[in-house]
Image (cartoon, rainbow over the protein chains, first blue to last red):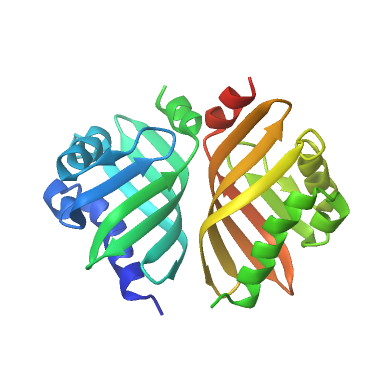
Length: 125
Length: 123
């Protein structure tokens, strides 16, 4: 019995599998803020696009999957617990993440992802 | 409009301010698992007590400030700033926690945070 806000976030996470940047960017408000908590927040669609593009797999055979383990919401705030999976360049990377999303007018206005940067960089190395 | 599980987690987080390990441990089920995601999980009450005791007595003041919380049946999420006053230092760690509550007790606690954000501040 997912709320409308939860459904938007579920669809958004699913959209990454298509690796279609236009489709992904369509979920954000113009003044959205995307904050990978170990890094500085990025504000506005242009900056968010650049950040998403930076980790989007480049080769057609690469895959990206945001696997949702649990989700829950209250009003416009949606939490999810995920394993973000990157298959690229022969590497299989799994990153445990907890995401917090704030929805405004059917769009994502805030996206904060909590994870340990070392868990990502060690697997990338 | 917090559900019962959400209230238990809010009370549990509040209990850290009193730094009483027995009071904190009373919230856990016998076979609970406490997993700080950057580290190995602590399984069972003895291991959980040891993990909490690794940071509880060394902090002059502890506050788990809850920014947002949401729940879905037995699953509770919260977004927090965990604050520790250690010596002259104020350490602040942004955390997202996922809890599973069954039979009125915490059976699973997973905290997502960036370990270097913590270790750099205590260095």
